[in-house]
Length: 340
Image 1 (cartoon, one colour):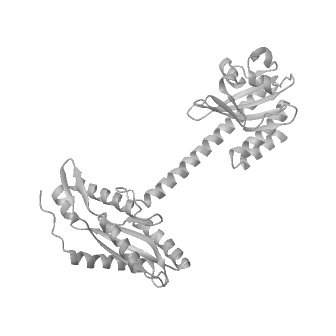
Image 2 (tube, one colour; image 1 turned 45 degrees about the vertical axis):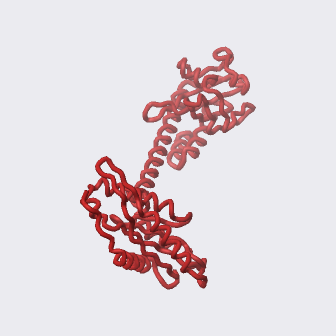
Image 3 (cartoon, helix red, strand yellow; image 1 turned 60 degrees about the vertical axis):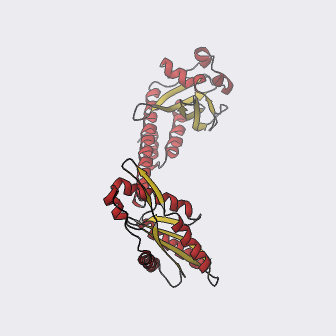
């Protein structure tokens, strides 16, 4: 097999990244054309700049990676505008290019790289400070290399998009859509981490269970839009009340849970627990205004406990906080909101 074809086959099959593929192709491009430098560029039309992304330099001419030049002054733009892919006398063709003059480019070859949507992504180029000719058909080889790079760029773009979508789906799976808070699944995942951290640090874990009293009546009397408004407003106010490092989650229709680290074991926990509970309760009143209703919400029932993570698991602790909330609810016995 032709050594060049063998190298090309190995490069395409083994390349895991755009850089892996491009560096191999640039090495082959220098060998095929006999020119001193080969390089891949990207073009930022919004900024009017061309960037040298990867380069291969074998002689006096050095095209540095990371170099950025004004797009309007580049040989690549002139090549595209005129449909001229090769010249062995840059000064005669494009003597007004400051970038070419400063770099000392005399022989130049360029092929555009387009995305799958047809947008100009960049160029694949080869250049030399000497006047050199290239073999017939070289332009087709360079165009083929450019197509391979374009396909790899598209593949990486699709992989990046897939990763982002997977990330978005993972976030959605752990997020309550209405309030934007973590949901029950996210809470249980985080509780395990917080309990482990608290046990290592020798601290209590504080859990607050919040239940919106008479929430069903709000939906029945004022409509689900009003109910959603209450949930969003209470979620916002609770989020402002918790400390940095605490976790707030919506775990059910009208139930929220707040979790935070408490004092160190052996220290008095009562004051911290009462402060934690009061801070949650104080923000569960809200004035609600929707196109169909305006009313004041009187507050929620809040139960709070402090647990030693060495003797409680997250599931049992959450059940205890729920039970504490129900004791508060029974003691409050608030009247239901009147019909509008």
